[in-house]
Every structure is written in C-alpha cells, then in structure tokens.
Length: 183
Image (cartoon, rainbow, N blue to C red; front, side, top):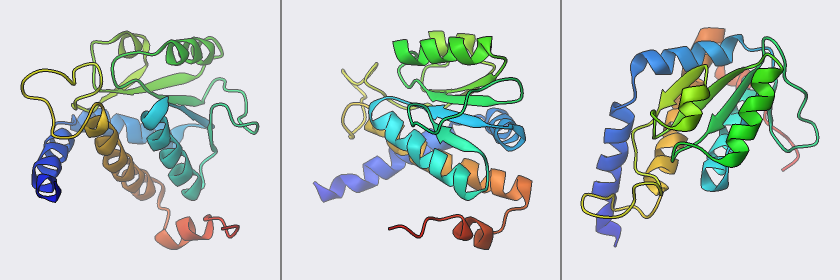
C-alpha cells in the first residue's frame, strides 16, 4: 500500500496547483485585515480548520473556533471562515446567516464553488478536490472519501499562513513565541 504515496502526492499537488491565485490572495487580505476571526468546519474538515485557527493565533491574530467557550461575538470588521467541501452543511449555513446578520464577512473554503455556501459567501476559496460529494465512480482519488480535500486543506492553510505572515511582517520567532508552553 505504501507505493500509493506517489499517486496521492500527485493528486494533492494537482489540487494545490488548481487553486486560483486571486482567490488565494483575497483570502490572505481578508484574514490579515480582520479584527476578529472565527472558524468552523465539520468532521475532518473541522480538524483542518482548527489547525488553521491555531496558526492564526501563532501569527498574533484574534482567532477562535466556533463552539469554544471563548469565541467572541462577530460583527462589522470581523471574518467567519467556514469549510464546506461538498458545497454546504446545515450548520455552516446557519452560522453564515448569523455572522452576516451581525455585519461580519464570510470566507467559504469549498471544493464545490457552485454550492449553496459559496453562493452566499463574501469570498470563496475553491480547493478543487474530491470530497464525499463525488467520491464514487471512475476517476476517483486513491485516497478514501474526502481525504483528498482534507489533505489539500492542510497544505493550502499552511500556505495561507505563510502569505499572512509575510503580509503582516510576522517573524518565525514571533510565531514561536505565541506557541503554548503547556504541553
């Protein structure tokens, strides 16, 4: 099974190469200029979102994960980042409605740019990858179910962090200084 790594890495590379540069730059700008940032995703997408939230915190940004007791309210000047790989989730839709009603902007990360969540978003970051919405039939990824999307999110989010770091002039040492010492 280990020999499948070459195919999996090629698939991930194709996903990352397919991300629109202008969408990527717009996401960097939106994150770098937001007052507060709340992030949300379900399942394994949610795990990747939590990783992004941690890195944004390391950059010194006011970032939190929806559902944590310390998540502040969002309003004008704030940003909600949600992942909706297959196009939409009921919880994503509800949270988008609350954030937008409060005046916050919404960035949707998705593999389905024609999906309902993307249609209601202020910004869309399309990560062209297989999710559970299209994981059956010919031409599917060597990776199971939505793993291609989730793996691409991990790398794309780390690349976003690099772009934000450069935009804000945050040094690697400053990021490291924000890392917890309670491990």
